[in-house]
Image (cartoon, rainbow over all chains, first blue to last red; front, side):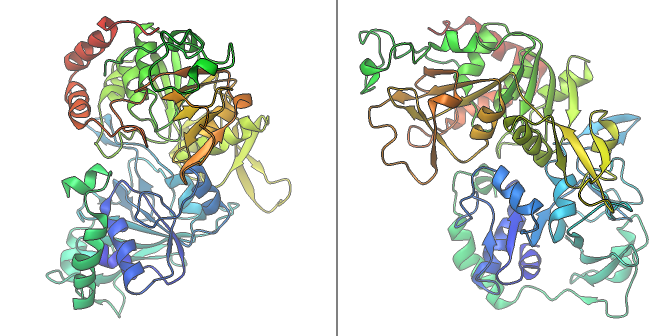
Length: 228
Length: 294
């Protein structure tokens, strides 16, 4: 999945990665090594990340339209590209997660948001989220600078179509089929004619990960790295 | 997280912590004791805390049995907020997310909310940052991007939607400015005039700027504190602060850049205690049983 995140990054872009998950961090470092050496990572938590002042300065950067790509994870994603980071309703009660983080704002100002989630199942990809942390489509008089573009999962890469307001299957990973991905999704996916198998990690990508990216991350202060 | 109590540097050099070059030359009245500094957080105050947890000050609040605090996690709520909630010091909390570094999540705020002891105000990190920025600038409100269609907007009674006065084709969400009664930060060092050197890795400056009363604890006082700032350091001048207390180990058991690393066992012990109400109650009792701060 980190490889797939890396493939979404264009050279020279300014990107943001939350440091709560290693997947986009690894992806960003991989992109910088291979296809996007000019990428600027707007997070101090990443080796070589931009030395911004706190998170507030990154927020301003994003709000002023200067963040080209932001990686975001969600508890639930629905057919309207709404995302939920806050709570699900279980047995009539709210089961709370960590919180909205920056989602309701960054979803509207980052030029592209790439959602990522290893688990691709009907409980993640639901017809309608229990709580709308950030809405997929802009409100009629809302000014947005960008929106969700791709959803990277452990089974597939999905593409968000803003014109048709639909989510379509771009590629299914080796071992999956369009049918198996659809079966794991709680809403109807559009299946375009050019749907294809996700190209697996190349030799160059794999080598860069093991020889450069993982060693660069090492077991630095961030505890999840030690756990991974 | 029992803290070694520290006396303020303004007291006689007999009691000043060793190694504080310049402590004996601190400008009179410039420094408070930890006890005095923390007494400036009254019951019912809104209190802003950042991710650089001022744990000694937090433990002192716990010992002083502060109640009714409205905690603002800037922009997320970390261990300091978590402990105050567990100790029953907070009646409400407002934050973008509850994040205990990379250590996972604790359940103290969830338990407290489920039991009706804590009001959770749903916010978002950039929303808190923009609200504080407006507060620091003396405004009463701020525009905020996004939020349309979000349940955060729907569930908050204090966020409003207006037509953008400079762009009438668009609406924009506005939020009230946030001026916390108190901001409590842990800086690294201070000079004898009480200018504080802090890290720039979190929102300490923003919290200090927005708060009505800003309190900083520091590891030490040094004559040369402001010289040779490291790349990740900033000066928070005394004019922005209302009280500065010298508290060596003030961030323990968490790391303090340039001073000490994280005490993983102590952190694990906290997380283990946080798994149950009983465990956390014992943890809090131990803090209260420890000797009071100077």
